[in-house]
Amino acid sequence: MINIREYLQDNILITDGAMGTYYAQLTGNYDELPEYANVNNPKIIKQIHKEYMAAGAKLIKTNTFSANPLALDVSKAKLKELIIAGIDIAHEVTANKNIFVAASIGPIPEMADHIHIDQEKIMADYQFIVDVFLEQGIKIFIFETFSDVVNLGEISKYIKAKDPNLFILTQFATTPEGFTRKGISNEHIVAEVKKTKNIDAYGFNCGVGPTHLYNSLQKINMGEDIVAVAPNAGYPEIIHERTVYIQNPDYFAEKMKEIGELGVKILGGCCGTTPIHIEKMAELIHTGSDRYVPKEQIVTKEKVIFGVNQLDGFAEKVKQDQFVIAVELDPPFHADVELMLDNARVCKESGVDVITIADSPMGRARVDSIMIAAKIKREVGIEVIPHVCCRDKNLNALKSSLLAGYAENIRNILAVTGDPVAMADKNDIKSVFNLNSFKLIELIATMNQEVFAGQPIHIGGALNLNGLHPEVEVTRMGKKVDRGAKFFLTQPIFDENVIHLLPQLKQDGKAKILGGIMPLVSYRNAHFLNNEVAGIRIPEHILNQFDKNMAKEEAELLGIEIAVDLANKMKDHVHGFYFITPFNRVEMIRKIIKKLNL
Image 1 (cartoon, rainbow, N blue to C red):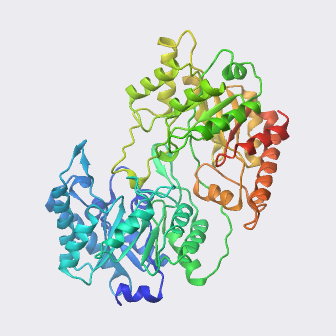
Image 2 (image 1 turned 120 degrees about the horizontal axis):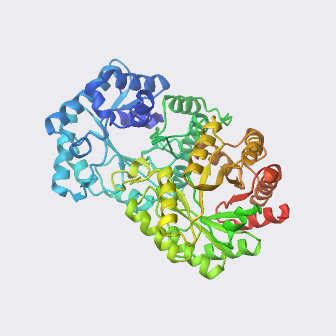
Image 3 (image 1 turned 90 degrees about the horizontal axis):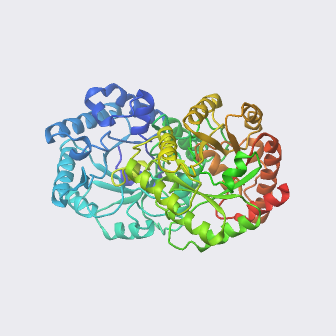
């Protein structure tokens, strides 16, 4: 087979997609790293490699991403056995085929049981791993999902000292805002890589879906660089304690084609992608076709929400069957909250009853929801519902947050399970989940009896009717009611079939329901939400109303019209509306409320 550098001169190199998430999907084993299967179940690893090759991948990575002493917690001898087994499998399935085989090496955790590991030991482990690959004749090394270049310069120098013709690719996990998980901008990380002369190619994988990576790449001067991109399928959700990704191969392929047109030479997939994603991408890139037909979502999203009671405020209106309006505002990533305060004032002037405030959605730190909620209530004079998620706090911390919020006269709290931490961040950011949504409801109900008896917290929950089996979500809603939930906020509703489910829920009278409404702002926004955000399903007849070439003002007006139409259709079947503000465009919410004459 020709050298990879020669291949890249005239071709876009298609690589494989995810190993870990696809392995879990096929086996149902979500608790064990797939590297163990190199020895324990080599048949399934061979199958996965073969499926990616059949899909059009010209490069497959060895099943060794987490093959290091800390991640696998094994001896050096066992580690070597697992790596060699992974290499042997890759060589076996690619024998006599024009397929590149690359070593997959992930970051070695810098902490174990909250103890920092000596950097010299980490580098010694990297060198041990590299030596095993070299002994087995590997010529291509891919360092995936890194957050800085601290160890990459030294290990790449070590590799090139063994053989300067070896090919080294380093890829970094990125956030939607264009930073690694250690807060380094993508532009800076690329500049640092370019200073490291032993690295042949760089790029990004994991952390985000293709749209955010496309946006980040537009800010980078790639020139003639060899750049590699392997995004996630989109944003994951937790279903029954499992991380599940949205199924969007056609959309993924179109976005990857756009990324390829920026000059990216190596294209593949990370978490959530499957051989179907790679097949669709390979077909589109090789044929040049730009045909794209949106697919209906097949995955549901659970978002658990709680609200709190105030005797003469939002919760009292809910109790008395008055129609209520809630508006969600996201806190910023920085400390300047003036825009959020101004938006809250607009909401108050528009007759909004309560502001809901997210708690670090998508697992990325923002201004603390309870702190900013207290500030909004004091300075704006409107009721607030800070979200409190289970992801980041143990039982003690959750109790402390609830007590602090109560001391600040916050009487509405929206407790959420919390979006999962991105796979790329899991070496540095640990999910807690000491409680789940049901247990958090029970905790608040217990505190109502023991601590807040004089003015108890009014508990709410989430309701997602957008999935294939909404009856399952209704059953879950009933269980939350049994534990103390009194009202529910739904995920954004776009489908009239979902609206038709609401009358029966209202008639059952188990709890008050606020219908979720999220105004769309553009063609890209609509397709992004439909294809990359789990739990949102937008029918084609709505997607087709948006055009790529629409002016901003025209698209916003269309988004407002659609939101008003949906709101009118569900108004008689819900106890209120729950508006999700897109991109801080609170004026859109104000115009919708005015048109609805609420």
